[in-house]
Image (cartoon, rainbow, N blue to C red; front, side):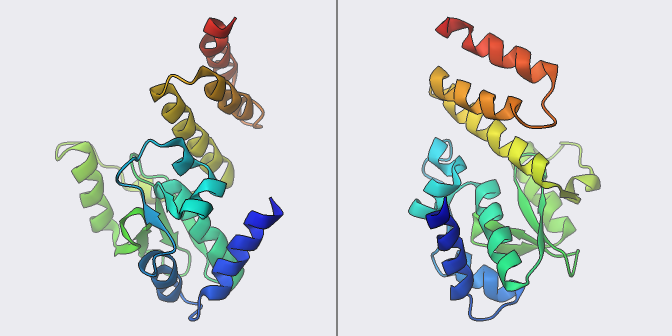
Length: 189
């Protein structure tokens, strides 16, 4: 754990211009982090240690790394749990969003809606509330949901069990989470 926290510290130290532009340029244009378009559902994209090692991830893990680097250099950002694609939101100018998966592309609210419709379909219902910041437990729960989906696609029930054990240990875990864990683990007896 300490080695990976050190890696995040080193990324923060590499940002020469401690602004949102400088952070985005260093992390996403500088080749430090990029979205894994070739194998989006690789479970390593959802594990921060692998994201830091491989410099590949999915929107939420890339965003978490960026938020932690930003926190260290005084560039505050929030995570935005838009359905289908996690984003970053500048805490200073809350009209500015960043897509960490698309090389740190800057977006406004209309750009976020266009991205959502591109992913969900042109007739999909849009709710501007999806651009509101989400808290850390929500981010962790979404990361675990992504990881569970990756392992289910690979039919790796042992790994699914590990993810569900983590999910059920969270303070907001529900009885439904417990039932799902039991149901998914039943084939393992």
